[in-house]
Image (cartoon, rainbow, N blue to C red; front, side):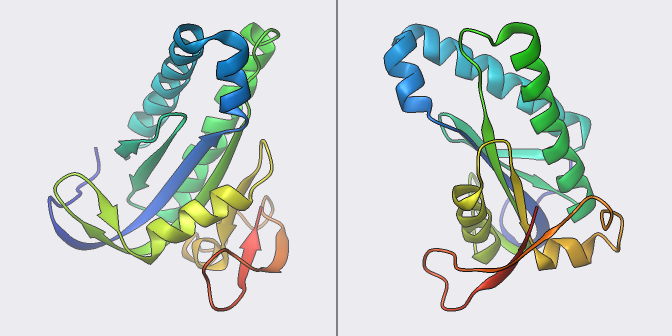
Length: 173
């Protein structure tokens, strides 16, 4: 697990995920089956976080918020989360496929005993909300922090308006 403080401010890369259309899924499968499916999904994502030395900050019901020591690691973990979800759909998901949206942000994060706050947390949530199913969105700042490691994989979507932000930010997928 990364070296995350119990409190204070520290640079981190954040990954926020959300299962697309989890409410209709719950209504179709029923509470117990949907809950079981989502818990299995979150356990898979937790294994990805652990494999990349990240920290699960909190579970969000049908998604999560995780922190990593570097933007590159956060992007690699995000890609693996998508790949794991897609693999699950190919192997077991014909009746109830899952699709996730992912937002990745980085910056100074304010840590408390059991949560985080600050611009990166808000930005990761806004990017995740703006993403299409099976899409990973990140900010230019994340791209710059990777030092060119993802230049061949990332594509600029241009300046985008995010809810609550006074000006557009450059978004990449």
